[in-house]
Image 1 (tube, rainbow, N blue to C red):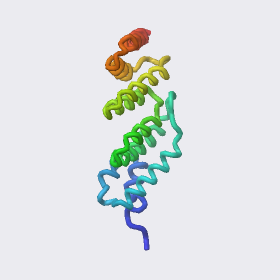
Image 2: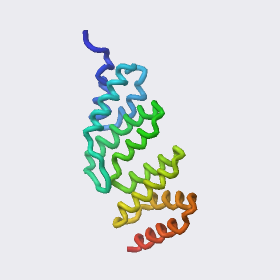
Image 3: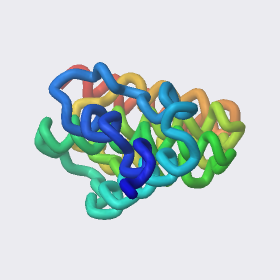
Image 4: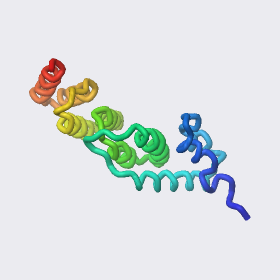
Length: 171
C-alpha cells in the first residue's frame, strides 16, 4: 500500500521550498495536524537533509537565489522544529550557519538576547563588527553591540565602537 499522504512531506514541502511565492511559508506549523507525526518527521528529515548540504557562510555575501531558497525557506522550517523541541542551542546554530552580512549577525545577537543569553549576544555582535569593520558601519549591529557593552559595564569599548561608526559614516 502507498505511504500515508503526509509521509513524504506532501505537497506542502514542495510548495514551501520550491514555490515562487511564500504562500506555504510556515506550512509545517500550519498543517501540523494534517501532516501528523509521520508527515512532520518526514518534513523534518527533508529540511535537515537540505540544510546539511548547505555550507556555512561567514563574512561574505551570497547570491540572492541561494539566500531565498536556503535562508528564507529551509531555516524557518528547522527553527520551527527546534522551537517545538525547546532546543535553543539548535535555534542559535541555525542562525549561526549564515553570518554573511552584518544584518545576520544583528539578528543572531538579538535572538540570543531574547533568549536571555547576553554573553552570546555580545560575542556575536562584536564578532560581526570585527568581520565587517572595513564595510560601512551597520547601525543595527553597532546599536546592539553598544547596548550590550554598556550593560556589561564596558563603556570605553562601547564608546570606541560608536566613534568608529561615526567616523565610518563620514567617509
